[in-house]
Length: 190
Image (cartoon, rainbow, N blue to C red):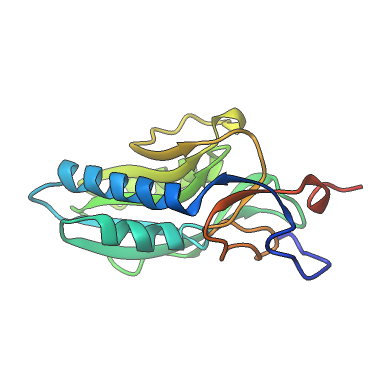
């Protein structure tokens, strides 16, 4: 976990707005409609990977027009005061109910290296779901170390450190309604 040594300034700490609130809203509606079509006549269980994907899942589930159930997981793959994934994954909070025989859609805020999600896919497949798909708001393929089959993608983004709409730095910035690029001097060691 990265610590922030000063009180963040939610607006001036952002170098650029990469994806606006309006663009996010439109994309979530589009994804919700696509999920509704693909699972028509069935229900789907949305699994949010805390904490970053919570705003996305909340908006996505309201945009889906078929019956949904939700569940939450929390995993950790970042070690110490770093912005890099360690590749070691710990499950901090497991699912509350069974997914055996269910159609499951993992809802992710961002897919970066793919290491954490690759582990999570193997773990959840072991629980016997009928189907297992991925919906990611953001895809950052420039950093991918493991191929991940993303079924629903919101936005493909460049290799920038982004915050907002659930994404954080030191647990701050999650409440921004847009996706912004954090100013480099705030997270790079000097």
